[in-house]
Image (tube, rainbow, N blue to C red; front, side, top):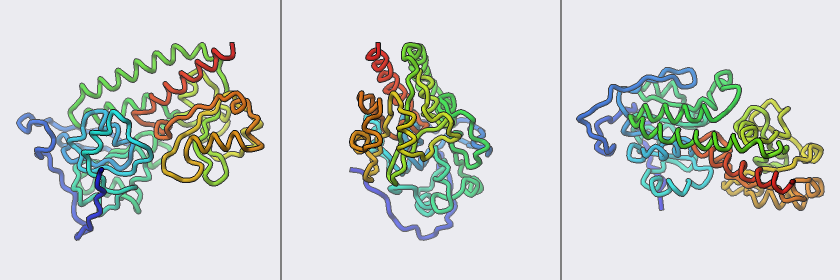
Length: 334
């Protein structure tokens, strides 16, 4: 069982310093790298040497690090929204947890990182880990995913797999494990090519991507997010492609009017009523407005971990799950 670190920091303004020669890295200090420079959401980051004391601020960043075998370079992680993928669970258990959600600036500084990484801009809020500029001013590179920049203008028009794989390449280069990065990228690109080739057989069914409904109003994928991209790769059409957003609230009546062929249901494990895929499916089957939808009536409901619907190294798994289900759907329709 992992222990959550809650130690009080005596000096909140303690400057963060790197520890590039730490023996925890598992890499020889006799062959130092020249370091790297890269741009992240409009900010230039200079990483003088491969980091030895990285902190990840949420699950997406954590799992990129684990996929690259970098758990021995991590001195902290935080904010799980779902269960860690089974193949990385053992490695994850060796990394200290700084906070159940985002760490405070004090918790982060106590960990004394030399690299901070998040796939969500909200991690760098003033009431969370603090701004990236503050960290950079203290000499700590702070990397943020291109899919969720602080300035929305910098976010790509289409949230797709290229940006995810470019990010894996960036992180692998920063940590001087470029071959590992190439291996991860090659495996995912092979899967993308295979699934794209199979998409022509699906018949382009309409899909609603249902993320949550905790406050009564369903949140669905619009035209600007990864879910929309996954649908197109898998040979489907987004029933809400007229929504100019990654995710947006709508109504059950509106979903009923669009009567999708398939509904993809996010399985959130944070524990709120209505979060789990089972809760959502039960609601769809019992609600007077939705129980007669084609997707509900014909049981064309696909449950996917919510983590996989956000841009991450695991999004390829959601694509595979959805693509397989859509192929089965098309075979049922023949």
